[in-house]
Length: 400
Image 1 (cartoon, rainbow, N blue to C red):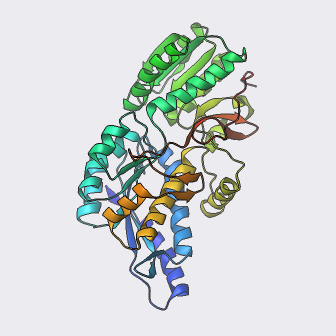
Image 2: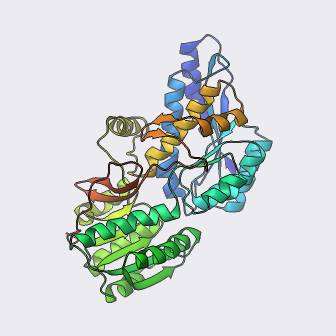
Image 3: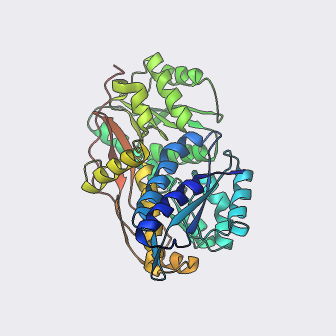
C-alpha cells in the first residue's frame, strides 16, 4: 500500500490557481482515493477512473476550488495503491479515514470493492457515490448503508438491456433463438450469468452453450471453440477487460459466425476499437453513450485535452458525473459536513454531463445506458434505462 504523489500534483495545480485567486492559499479539501494502480483491474481503473479524477481536480481548482464557508478551497487527492487486493483496499480506506483524516472519499473501481469498503464509509459518514458497481442488492445495501448511492444500474437492469437487444434483433429476423453464453467465474460474472439464464429463458431464447472460466485464464481458445461448435445465433460473454479482448481475438481466429456478438466490460474502451478496427463493426458490449449531445461532446473534448486520452464510451462519463454530484452537493451544503452532504445528495437533483441525476428512495439513479454497439468508430447506446436516447441495434456482418 503506497501513498502516491498524485496529491502533490493536485496540490501543485491548486496552488497555482490559489495564487491567481488570492494572496494567501486556502487549506485544501482532502479527498481520499484507493485505486487499483497495479493488479488485474489496473487497466480498467486507468481508463475509467483516474483520468476523470485528474480532469475534475484540474477543472475545480481552475475555478479556484470548492466554495465552502464563503471561500474557495482547492481540492487535493490523497491516493493509495491497493494492487487490486481487497485486503489492501480495506486497510487503505481505513487509513485514509483514521490517519489521513480526509474530508471526503472517491468511490473505488469494481462492484466487490465498493461493497467491501461500504462499512468503513458508513462508519465515518462518508457519502459513497458508487459508479462501477452493479448488483441486484441495491435495496439491501442502501438500507444497511444509507450513505451509499448507485448510478450504473442493477444486475437485472443490465441483463434486461442485453435481452431486449437480442429480442429486437430476433424480431427483425436477424438472429434465431440459439445463444452461446460464457462468464468469468467471479461474483460479477456468476451473478450476471445467473440472472441471464432466467431472463433469456423467459424471452424464449435457448442457451446452447453455457460455460464459465476462472478469472485470469490465459487461453480462452477452448471456450471459443466450444461456443462455435454449438452453432449459436448470438454470443454473450459476461467478461472483464482482459477476457473481452481475448474472446474477441479468438472469435476472429475461429471466424465465429454470429449476427450478435456481445462482450461486457472494456468493449467500450477506445483501446478495444483501436486494437480490432473495422473487424468489430457491429460488436455489442456493456455501456454505450449518446455521443451527440452538446454536453457529451464538450466533456469528451475536455477529457482528451486535459488527460491526453479519450474517455471510454460507458462508465467514464458516469464516473465524472458522480464527481459532479459530490461537488455540487458540497457546495450546496456550503460546509465540509459529510452527513449534510449525504442528505443533500438524497434530496436534490444534479446537472451532469450525462443529464440530470437524482436518486430514488433506495439511493439509486434509474438513468443509465446498458448496451452499446460499435458503429463507424463510435460505441453508441442501443439499450438504456431512463435515458431515452438509444438507437436501434443492427446485425453484425462478419469480422472483416
